[in-house]
Length: 254
Image (cartoon, rainbow, N blue to C red; front, side):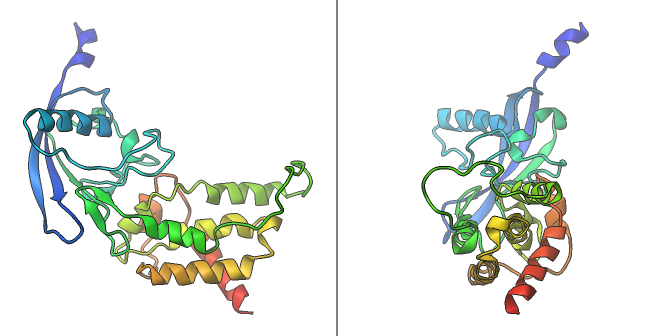
């Protein structure tokens, strides 16, 4: 009966990047993913493969994961040459195996960027993004009781603009997708979310200057308007925030 088709399994060929450490040579290795259903997520498929590898006495594939709900941005993988697999507003953990056919070959690699050194296999060190935040991605505020929500009136347009920028989950897909390895979309989003709010005005000039300097010190490349960052972003962060970042930097010079 057709109703049983959803229980059919598929077999896939995985070509996975394996690398023992940041200073070790890397290589592609081929694995077979067996008994995969349409209901498996991409990471669950890798779990199945790793269980089989462990049973065979082999080292499992190392990959980053946490929430598995498209919120944390940890699942940094390039699938078939595209960060997060290339499906609109979809992280790797939100990919489902119904998007692949029985017998498909899938290439899986880590983020590729100078600022993201490989730790092992598919896991990279994205601490450079944290350092950009630490350089200025915050506002100073008095401690104590929480102020009333309407204590500082904020126009709806500004609030929505700020929330659009704050939707960035810091996964680094923009960096991995950019041919220059630039972090301008990430930094632009983090600067813009405060630039539109009154709470962010006091430290605005210092913030953008410090974050851009840290971005450069971390080894990220320059933006040359390829727009690959926006195309790769699983949250649809708009390149208009890069323009806002540039405007805020020019204002800081004055």
